[in-house]
Image (cartoon, rainbow, N blue to C red; front, side, top):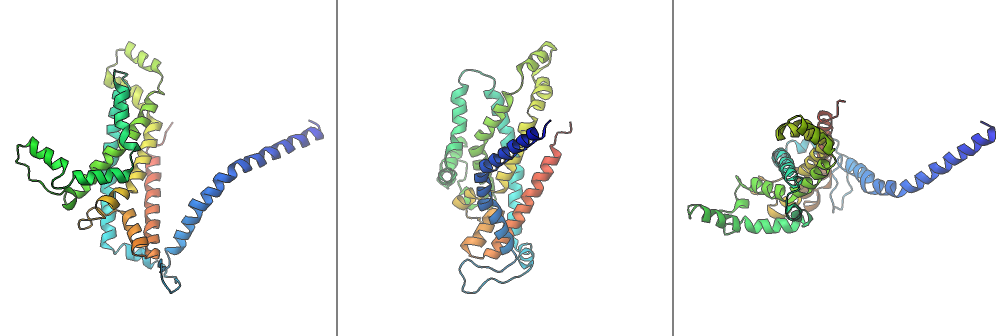
Length: 301
């Protein structure tokens, strides 16, 4: 290779590198503005006593906010509620979505309409859905009236969201119903990527439906399963809208979550330093769970 050829090739590579940086620049600027800078500001605020509106400048308080968080009974209850919500929602929502996806993938008559009905709640605003379900959960709401009809009047009506024993369960039911259509679509896309020849080979070998699912379908859905588990877990841990609209963390903090408590402290009570510390703790929890989940579900091949 001559010197002039090498020089031309290096020039071409530098030109392609510049083009790559120009194309990536908008995304990098947005990520820096809306992700990197807010995280750095949150990290700095979490070590101060900054308040949203205060005549006094913020001062450095070390780890006081973090110590205060783990002595705050509402925050500890919020951690418990968040983990209970995630532990119930993740398996039910992913399992239900997979079952519906298998039905839809069977290509029987009417699946297009069925798929549309299942997906409709996903495109509806969570605020609107939460308001509607709040009416349904009232003492004279649709759910109590239906239960009264089914039990011939023996059901004693009560406000589901006003009872400490049922408020979180009511939010869980709404959340599973609203979002499982989205995950059904993702499972369905994974199912349709599996080679039909594998099912034909399994049928020739006399495999039952369960054996085909276990040895063909489930291994083919591995990457889809990892994606769904991680996204549902992150969404469940970030529970906020339903709580803000339906219960405001009550009754008796029985539905308060980490994100809701951080927003309440940081913005509504204007305690920005403490709210930032709660957000940082939440960030570490989500990161740790995601890494553990990724390690458990990693492809060992």
